[in-house]
Image (cartoon, rainbow, N blue to C red):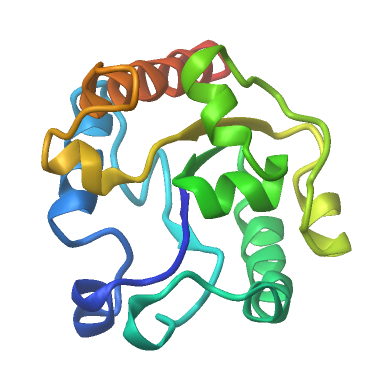
Length: 167
């Protein structure tokens, strides 16, 4: 899974996706038989949290993408779960997450902002996009009135089915 950047809990622990929102996502994955560190790993577009936990700038993203590319080359993922708007935009283009919520975004072939090394690292990798985990953890509603948690569960189930089919 790929998120935007570490949060405060991640800064303190040195591990990704360890706050309330991250735990929510891990529980969804574990409920489908996927274990962190064995079936999946965690990374972020940025390696460090931007000041004030603001959205990252394009320059910050571009500076960090070579590091993400190295991680992807080493991990050799079969699928990427893009968590939130920023990772989805980096890999699939601006606005792709809203398309994902309304329809279905599968196997996007174009990496929008991503560094050439990232494009090379994900050749043949299936991309899945989902809302950021915060709305899932706090059970917020999507613009259409549905629960973000339900949307997140559908995407996680799609990822789990995809991985089981290729095991």
